[in-house]
Length: 340
Image 1: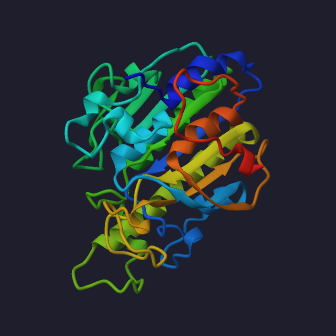
Image 2: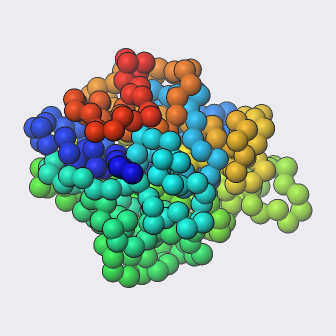
């Protein structure tokens, strides 16, 4: 089976563009965060002003759909194809060795970095560094048991994380963008965050923010409070990335993408939709999608057409000026025509 990934395709054909004209790309992917876990969606129990700003300053998709669980969503994002084509059918049933992220080319001039939860294969050749990433910092499995200074890896070497993992992943991503800018290289920064996936751990300052909120929780139910606190921490880290792009003076020519991998991992407000994580009902597979590019996309537009995670690969490629097509057709379709 011939396979293709967003990284593979970008490596193969972005090299035709000049380094000065190529947009940087930052992709945020959160884990088990439902459609309703943003103030942009109408949730009044939390505030996610930085994430909301991506919709305000870019385009938002009201009917964007992913898979009910995380591995298939990641496979479809990285390939632009239906997940069964790459034998990805569940979350942890032995499919990792058949991940559809085969590296085809590596001569584009881009710096590629991934920081967070990979979940695309743990051993060579399916490790991030074997898939074309110059820099990887995080963990490769789909589940991790500790979010505070945990055992992680950097480019295949075991290291100890520093503090809360989401903050740590973001710090490493900021350093990566700084290094790329210093070398005058456009960067592709992939931030597949691992919250609000369990274990429900979050820094005290976020936990305490929800101490007095009326969240209609049952006695002893701490899951909802933890999940909302984790979402606000995600928002804080998105703000850090936005500030860094401004500091590096590259915000105008950087494409930013935000989406979630499936529905919420618990019973919480989700816009009145049925279903949550693991369900094929709307609440289990509807996600926000925001795409911001100040230098290329007019801000403030909301798009109601039905689109999917498979469409992100061809969309990013066309936004980046890619003309060539992969040898096998993609299942996804570029959204550029409806964005403009």
